Image (cartoon, rainbow, N blue to C red):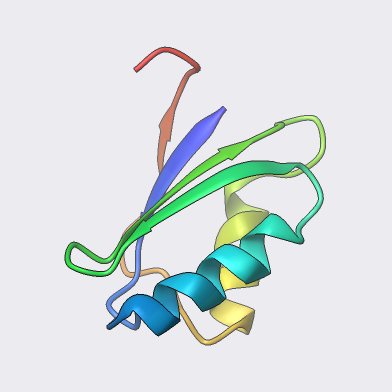
Length: 77
């Protein structure tokens, strides 16, 4: 499963690296792409191990609260 989250707290490449580090150590997260210019975080995850809500909470706990509701996508893009 994939989800796209937006956080205006992501302001630079350093923030993007922090977000990647936080999420990649979360159970069930397979891949993370962060674009500081658009403030979007694309996460591929195993829905049996985690959820979009849990991922958003993990981001908020790390100082990057989500601005918009999660946009979930299936495996096909």
